[in-house]
Length: 131
Image 1 (cartoon, rainbow, N blue to C red):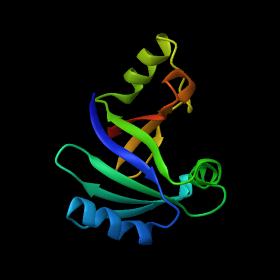
Image 2 (cartoon, rainbow, N blue to C red; image 1 turned 180 degrees about the vertical axis):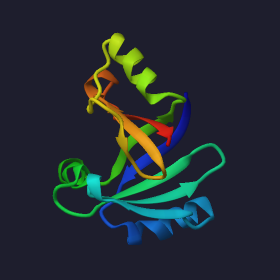
Image 3 (cartoon, helix red, strand yellow; image 1 turned 60 degrees about the vertical axis):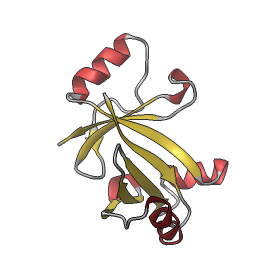
């Protein structure tokens, strides 16, 4: 596995873009709305991984719930896997629960699956595979 991206929940992506643009000395390379997740994503490419800003598009979004409960900040860490189905099966065999039974479409042309944070020391982990 390699670190693919770090997801950061933000209340307003347009206000956060200048902050991360200044920090990373670059503009985002991609903005995308994932309707099924009720989220707008903004991606920055760094040398070693991507930074993904996540803004809720409505109150049904897990990002809306996250920010309401915890405020803005680190939401998840994503690892790229060569075969997401195999990775999910191997982790389940080791007692790590997944939050979704099957991979689903995510942003940036990825199939994704989240691991239960209670099984990963309180950190939300995303597995992702290029479609």
